[in-house]
Amino acid sequence: MNQNNFPKLHNATWPGLVGKGPDSEPVIPFDTMLEMTAAAEVDGVKFDGIDIGLMDPHLNIDSTDDDIKRLADKVGNLNLNIGSMVAPIWGGPAMGSEADRKQFVESVRKSCVFGQKLRDLGVRPYGVIRIDSASSPQSWAADPVNNSKLIVQTFQQACDVAADFGEKLAAEGEICWAGMHSWRAMIETLEAVNRPNMGFQADMAHTLLYLMGYNSPQDRILPENYDWSDRTPLTEGLKQLTAALRPWTIDFHVAQNDGTVFGSGSHDKTGRHCQALDPNGKLNIVEDAGHWLRDENGNLTKAFQHICWDGCMFPNDVMNKQQTWNDILATLIKVRQAHGWSAPVPVNAESLIG
Figure 1: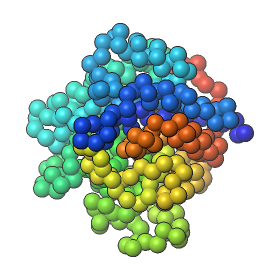
Figure 2: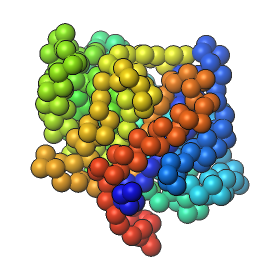
Figure 3: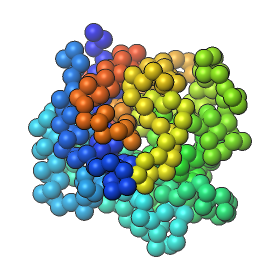
């Protein structure tokens, strides 16, 4: 077997939470997500870590030092690390009132504090803090110019706070978030923020919808009524998309999508995450991940030290099967075999932040 040990392979725990709740299916507890991640194994290879959402009831962003120490011990005892973290910024939209925007920045600050404590405890040697605008494209469209200015100003303030902690912020490219609802809008936002610690989080399921022009038909790359049996336009479209967004990409989610949108619970419709082996998936996961992990000349970018699988809004009966996570791990291993590298783990873990 290929002996690449980078990028590290992570599983996201927030799919036990996102799209769940009283108006959907029950939340899957954090400990269950953690245990199923730790139990997954394929030919002796296991997950290296988890990415987490700082959201109740999984994790409280206002956790005490003792709470965070218990979390670090729990994860470390399973031979896992923690990587990227989702900041719970939805209580204060980035283009909302002054009070909303202050709350947004404060949520980022609290996330940075949480992340620094995990680094100090030795369980978070890499990773970023993930954000979005917490605002809908529909509300943004009422005044695109001024709303974009507010999003940019809020992101700039959040970046300045994060910089004090040595953290990078990754804006999630997802069609349900204003200012990042299309690939062109995402680039315009990133360019306007213009901070060295601001980047892009690419999720293969979400970025496929960028190609299809959902919520922004003028930015569509694939032809209308595209015939999915012909992969040539898809490959060319992915080359165009990744050439534009790859330079900004600092966090990466491996995922599958069947070319549709989906929402459950209170979550808006967005790119449907499919199982790793879903026969209706439109992506060749291993091949198409290479568009993000390699540059236009085919060279590895090594832009991030770990990759993560995101399976948001999978049904609970799927998520509670261990085979689901074994299949996901097997897919991630194939991605690393094709697009990874072998390197000694640095003694100074701080060099891996990002």
